[in-house]
Every structure is written in structure tokens, then in C-alpha cells.
Amino acid sequence: MDVSQRRGEPEAVECAAKECEPLELALVEGAAESRQWREHLERYHYLGCCVPFGAHLRYWVRNRQRELACLLWTSPAWKMKPRDIWIGWSDKQRTGNLQSIVNNGRFLVLPWVRVKGLASKILARSARQLPQDWQRHYGHRPLLLETLVDVERFRGTCYRAANWIHVGQTTGRGRMDREHKAHGQAIKDIYLYPLFPDARQRLRGDFTR
Image (cartoon, rainbow, N blue to C red; front, side, top):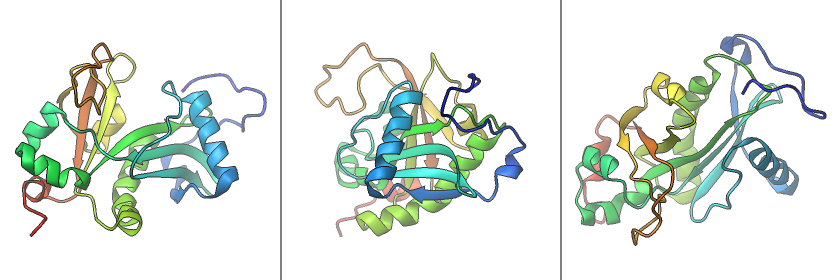
């Protein structure tokens, strides 16, 4: 994140994390906001801004109208062995209950924001707010959050600091690769955050009854 200020960028934010409170997570709304959010991801996130398919929510993270970060939450990966072992579910249970997991597909602290400990605070705030927003938009409350961290670029420090659980690594295929064809992608660490103490038991349950 330590890059020089570019023309047109806001002034650098350098302070203690507590000085960025209260944090506001605001859903991206309207064409102008959507365009600006996409532009930030395309310009500053190494993966760019993919067009999400299926359920998703996009957020600005702000402090007193000052934009600090962008977040994208999406439908979960179809199959990830370390996650599935951690949950302990069968293929049938996974098929039936997979949409009770939400994936943190993008997390971008804007490059002019250099605040130690802020990222983990944003993740903690997200874990409190996202479930109710997801339920309001999609009619069900998620039980588990997941994310993938590129091990060649990041150490997952903010996820660990926010009490996410490291459960293993991907095999180098795309997260929705059902036919096992997309080999050669970056190996990524898998982190999970249960939203309920009994999240694993609920994910193994039969929600159709």
C-alpha cells in the first residue's frame, strides 16, 4: 500500500486506527458510485474488477464521508477440500447448504490509506453487518465467511488478526472449477470465519425440512 500519491488522488490518510472510527460500511448504490467503485478496483487491485455472477454485495468503507476501502462479497467456491473437511459435510449436504457461505472476493484498502490495524477492524465490522444485509437482499442469513489469499503476495495478517481461521490451501484451480480443467493458477491460503459457534453443525444440517 506504500505508494506515492498520484495526481487526482486524495491526501494520504496516516493515523492510528481508532482515529478512523466510526467505520461505515455503505452498500454501493447508483450508476456513479458503481462506476467509481469499479474504477478503484480496476486501478488498484491486482486482480482487477471482475463482474460477479450470482448473489453479491459491494461496499464502500468510509469514515465521515472519507473513503477508505472497497469490499466485494459473493457466492462461495463450489468445492475446496480444506474447507469441506473443516465443515465435515457430505457432497449432498454441500450441494444443499453451500449458499449459506459467503466469499470475500475483493478487499482493497485504498493505496493512500496507510493505517496500521485498519484492515482487521474493517473485517470485524463486516462480519457484524454483512449477515443482516445479505439476509435482507437474498432471504437467508449466512453461517460462514470464506476468502482466498494469494500466498505469493500476502501473508493473511489482517484475516488472522480478525480471528479468521486458516484451514489449508487451494490446489491451483479456479474456485468454481467443477470440471477440474483450470490448473496452473496461484496457490492460495483458505481462511474461514464462522458467524455462529455451531456454524459447522448447521452447515451439515438438512435445511429443506
